[in-house]
Length: 211
Image 1: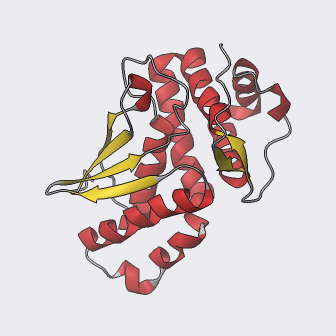
Image 2 (image 1 turned 30 degrees about the vertical axis):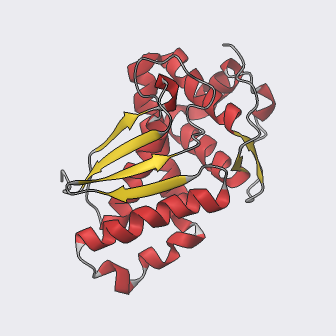
C-alpha cells in the first residue's frame, strides 16, 4: 500500500486509541496487527496512542487504517468493519466527551425527538472540532440534516475513489444519533466524499428514524 503523505492535521490520541480498541473488539488483536502492518504503521502494534487529548495522531495515518481495511477485506467487508468500529468507538468512549455531557441529563431526555437532534448533532460536531483538526458543521433542511466534515481524517490523501469511503464516520454518526435520540436508528448516507474529488465529506441524515 502506498504511504499517504503526512497532513500536519491531527486527531487526539484518545480518539485514535478508541478507534483502534474498537477495531480490536470487532476483528481481534491479530486482525488489527495485520491492518497496521498493511497501513505501514507497524510502530503502533502493541503501542496504541496514549489515553490523552493531545493532538498527535496524523490524519494520514487514520486514513491509511481505513484504506487498509478496504484493501484487506474488499470494499464491502471493509465497509462493514469500519461501520462497526465507528459505532463501537462512539459507544466505548466518545459519548463521554465533554461537550456532550449535557446531552445525557434529564432535561435533555424529555425533549421531543427533533429538538434532541437539533441540539445533539451540533454537539457532536463541536466535540470533533474542539478536540481535533476535524472541522465539522451541521445544516438543517426540511427533511434532513447535513453533517459536513470539512477536513476529513477518514479519507485524507485519497482522491481516486469511485464511491464514498468514510464508513467509520457513518458508524460514529449512527451510534451517536442512537444515543442522542434515546435508542432510534437513523439513515445516514455519505453524499459527497473528498476521496471522490468533492470539496467536503457530506453526510445526509434523515429526520425521521427508520426504527
